[in-house]
Image (cartoon, rainbow, N blue to C red):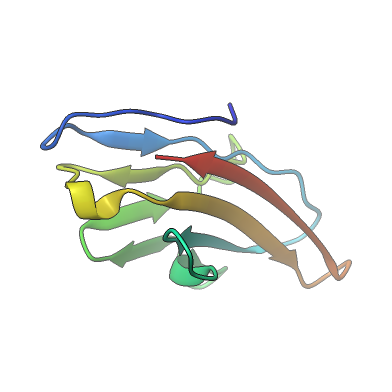
Length: 101
């Protein structure tokens, strides 16, 4: 679901991301703060299915083709646009989903 999400400080964040790919894509979450360009937050590869950074985590699930971003306790400083992206090394294609917090 694209769109803005409003949470109270301390609430749990889950941003859903599902994908369609052939092979073993590398999956990414980017964070984009107001007035700035996207910055890599975390990624998951074939060798390492789980990404973690600054309290955020996402685990690639090949069965459900999902890579949901989670954080146990959000803060006002987490206000940003979050982008889910993939790089499919087998077909050299890319896709993305955008979510605002």
